[in-house]
Length: 395
Image (cartoon, rainbow, N blue to C red):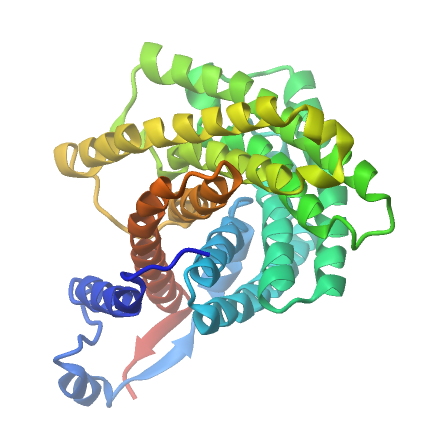
């Protein structure tokens, strides 16, 4: 694990950023006006807005498990940089969020099954269901690394692996047999790369559970390698379609949503999966024979991810500063947090895998960026949920 002199400032950066963002939220207490706002709010009471809650569950995005993915990888990044208490706290937050979201999705399936079916057959929304796979596996990695809880990690791995089989083949089957299909500019986006992220998440947790599950280590690592290579091929296919859509079709500012950051995030988790296999290569004769190929392929994907960062950043500036799209909380912003955290973690693991400590300097910068962005998005989510679920009334 790298030593990082910038880490002690990370928490203060997150707090400062949170206060800064809060100062722009109308009616929200700032750090300097807490007493004044409390006095103003004293005559009011907050009542739960049940109609808003019902409507929100009905319209719940299939991709909301990206919250678990993002928080989980930020937690793991914190652990790698020595913030163990912070990592443990985020694991607790993630566990609660995971359980609550599972309950909400089951309720939505029972209560609004027609909406769920519509989402499953929607080219633009259906890949979002794969966030459940990645979320389960990322949470499993958290339990394994932070709390050393192998049993829970194995349970989450089984959930993640089985749901991957169900959801990825269901997704491709439904969009293939669908008779009325949308044009490519309306159908495809960075969300489609969740096919890659979910596949590589299975590889990541499987590799780290090697030796703990009731299968020979050689077989486990071989299976993990197969998932890794499938994820690589899926990325090559999907990113080609995404580049075709971006370059040859008109892109409205509203269409360049935060999930396009997954263009980078998908190769970041691919890098992580490859780096972990390199680390365990001595336990598999096959991986030993493939080691030069595996190192080169893993470095290739990290390089592609690094290339994407300036481009998506420039397009983000174009969206918000040039085209004046307001910065408001949306669940899709978790699709931006996850790639930033994953790029940080994958860079740390790659540095160890190929013995290239120089690139740790990049991780030192990105861990701070990822923590600050996570704090801002999490803060925005809390404020948005409060406003949606509660109304103020005169006494």
